[in-house]
Image (cartoon, rainbow, N blue to C red; front, side, top):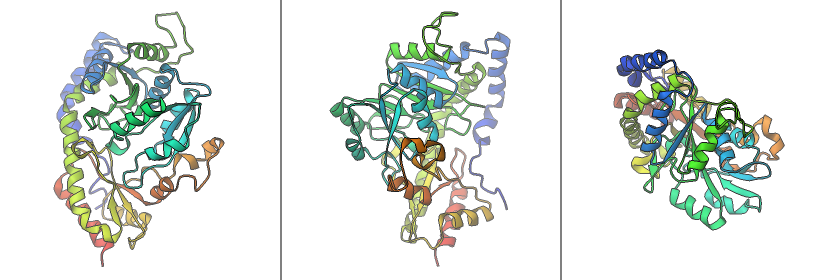
Length: 377
């Protein structure tokens, strides 16, 4: 019975496109433009266009996208960037690599998104930007973000690594702020066959600066005007992403449909301590992950439930088991246990259920039925 329902299964997406992948890869091999080749240029244009943004710059990872994107926006030494503690550590790494200081705030317990009301308490004269994380496929409210940024004269730089083509308040993820960063890690809604990332922006100046930074700080060959790095999206990965991009909207719709089916099945278990995170974006939530909370009313702990689900062949995940402010390597930021109670509580409660295009309703029914049998008497 083990692995009856995997946590992620990419076969639904990849198998029908196998011949197209081979053709795209062979085209790169034939041209021999393996670094910053034609496929990269084509993908940069295509992804920025569907995201409603003027410019896209392919980079080596989402982490590098945050770092170079912030640098290109003029954020660096002595600047403070407000960011949620409830995110993957790459968000914090990107801020630090840019030379800025991450200022952490708590998250909302019902959505796991950044608590925008907490921002007022941490703004100083060094605060330069807000870095909202569109977590699990749901956007932070663009309307609230823009109002807050305008009030305090702050830049918005979006971490949209989990939110490809998510939308809310008539904005598409990546189009709200001055710039944004995406990841194309294989398990993302739009995933490559390795690492990859992109910075989106409506500013030609910022786009050009990221292009310079990603390529050794050189706007032209052998002329190095910036302290850059080597962080470029590979042409072969871009070719793969070009094949997958036209299918992304349909795949996202399937994720959203699966999320609603989970919601429907799990709604009767709230009194038993099973509470899905709230979807405030409706059709705009692209469910990179489907996350539930196992609260104090549940007869099982989160770990007990996870283990029992595994015994029936249902794979799950935890995103994330330790908030950023409690990570050992980041003690130097000065935070302690108790600083962000919602993030800490969620880290003990959350469980990610299987979610991917091609996940069948019968499989979701089995997951829901199994959870119900374990938490009800």
